[in-house]
Length: 140
Image 1: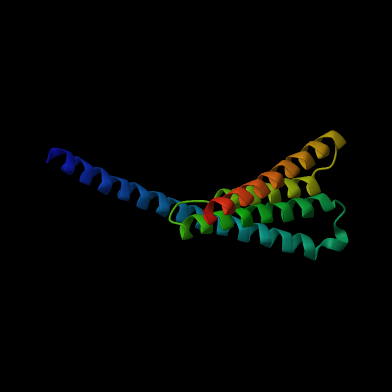
Image 2 (image 1 turned 30 degrees about the vertical axis):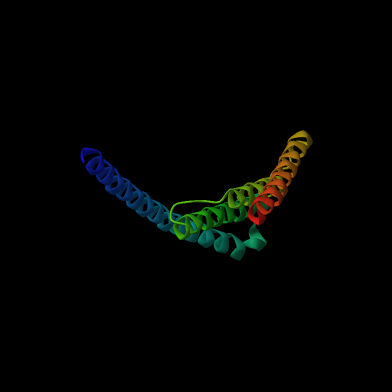
């Protein structure tokens, strides 16, 4: 009898923690939307002054930051749609796009670019293996 009360209390407490977690993730999403909007405004201002822009790296940095916010918002939406869970495939895809974005923006040292490309290759291989073995297990 006492164990059932403890188990019921633990379930209610777990539900409360999950609700608080989802609310916090929702607030994080709203904050990210604000910062993404501010970054977009800055990109538009830099784009309007493109004729006077001598350093295009500022514009490129703004675009990379905008897409970084966009990816985080996509992750928040995915978490909220799945009740607080994120699939490994989604995270691997985020890692691949983040590394490719970094590879496009950062190319000062050739060895670093090679290492980033190898990391992308490893993540793509992981995605292929995960998809192949996950689909094989679903058929059983």
